Length: 126
Image (cartoon, rainbow, N blue to C red; front, top):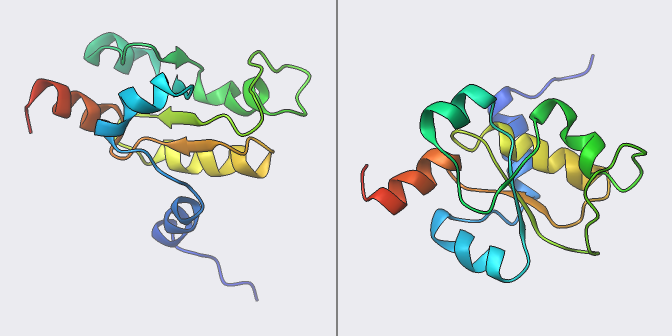
């Protein structure tokens, strides 16, 4: 019988494979060539705002738009280019980044705490 991981174990395993980016590192990472990708649903972007410089790729098509083997790829990445995904709070983006690693996007990672952590940093609110 196969022992299934808990969701917390699954998330921890995904994150252990990522070189995650903190909110205060985003600006420098982008200046150094990182691609910032917003995978939040449209209603969150409308209600909460955008992170400047981010490309929007809906989560439902993310792998098809970025995977090197995909015929539906819309983004050409440099080998090893950092790709920083973010969602609302940094959970969904961790799992998505690990999936991209599996598909050959070597620089895939995510934003610790997601959009809301970044927004809190830039507005000074907690």
